[in-house]
Image (cartoon, rainbow, N blue to C red; front, side):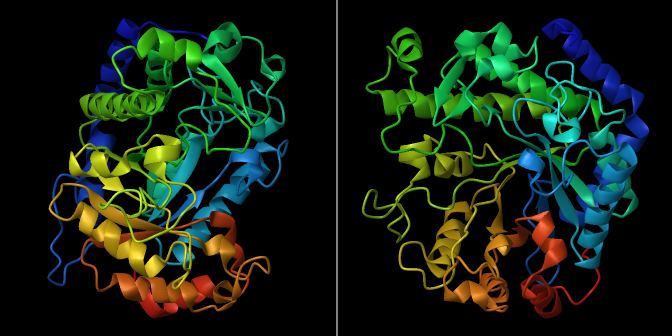
Length: 420
């Protein structure tokens, strides 16, 4: 891979902007008409601009492509089919996972081609999936948010399996093994800078409509496992009272720095995050939700999502409220109002992540066997003006729709053409 300096990257960003100014500015204007800019609140008096979206997960060939090693033509056919499913379900936005595991679904200047395309990390697939999905989605009047995973390196723990020249092989001191997987260490300033550079490469070069992160910051806690960042804490954490405070500051810095750099390159792009649905339980913090979740993003993932919303660091927040109504530990009917109250009076918009993948799964509790469960979620949110849309996980289930839960949502809530 060819590396470029920060100076040349900045110059390249300007060139990318000026070189496509007409198409990019036109697309930005169209997106503004459809969704509004993140800095402005919509008119809730009948002209509510509603976001209807789905995630397209590429990691481990979850949604697309169906398997690695398919021909470019077959991969493109499958991706177009996903976009057509979105149109058929009257959605207006897709969240395309462009950087699943410290790799890329575009010819990145920083990271290797994703193994999920060809089966071999670093192998050129012969086409540019990110460019293709942006072009084909825009032709169908679908917005595209590029979905990046900041710190996950690999679903295994062997640096030697990474392609020669991989940044983590060149800098093994950046990597931490945890739970059989590899992660970049968020406590290293050089890591934070690098993962931003890797994402901004796509931001500057492609006509995307937004930048999207999921819920993976520090990894989810595992019994008996330790995320060994003690050396980084010793070097960089001297001004913090404890390890947890330092880790939260590391993630705060990542969000703050990335937001600033995205807006500097393309001020009109939306930047949003889809966190785990529980910030903190009320038993832990009076400001928390009336839940008893085993995981709390503030304490376990070191992501202070409430702070980011209240300080206006995000254009939108998209909590994954992946539980049914009435679930004792984490009730959808309690969490959606908590998030609505959290964004009230801020510049941050609120969308809700919906667990379509659970509908009809025999391993899930009875409410998820009812095709109307998800529709009831949207009905509840109609009473919460802060909720401006819903995103469904994920594309495979949007197409398959095992028990008709998505069809029920469309019939009950999306009967008209997609909102403009």
